[in-house]
Length: 174
Image (cartoon, rainbow, N blue to C red):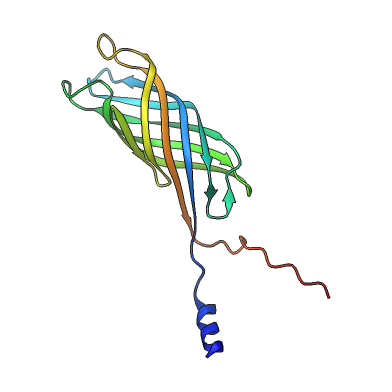
């Protein structure tokens, strides 16, 4: 019975590696309002810093902070629906950090919803954020064009097993 069980266990493929880290992101966000409509515009994040704690890709440890940047477009909720910082947007973010194996650099699509506080998602990052003072603009006499961007996120990565990931055991001395 033992050889049959070993044969079955030996044929099961290894599980996919996962990594989950907790991250904070902080930096400057700028808004460029469209001159054609009062509800459309573009946004950009940078300079910004991402600082993650935990594993990446299941077996690598994140060893320090890295850079974070992003650009995209937004559509504000209709006038009269709240403050001027209510919008939905999309774009691309680029970020990276060092790990025990190598330096990571990711470029991912990004989407968000902002209504006071906000939520965002990329294929790897999911979290909440706030656009906080100090503001350039006041939402009353002129739109906000620059503010502090502060976020908390989970970094979750799934990858199929890498055949080079596992190092063979050292031979036993004779």
